[in-house]
Image 1: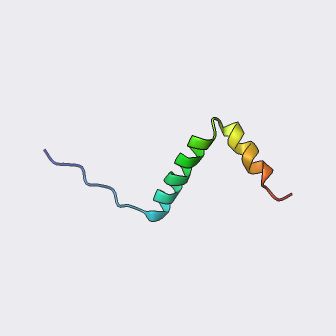
Image 2: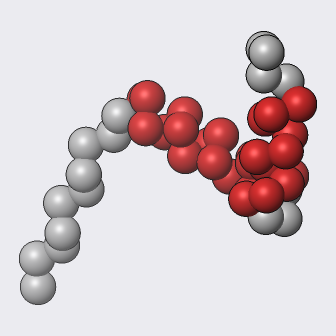
Length: 43
């Protein structure tokens, strides 16, 4: 049986996935993440 070829790795996507995992570990909901980001936005 043939193995599936591995998709090419993209350093930008790998960084995005790493950041997503960090956010998921830090915040329990999208509302918490949204409030956090709004607290640091320039108004």
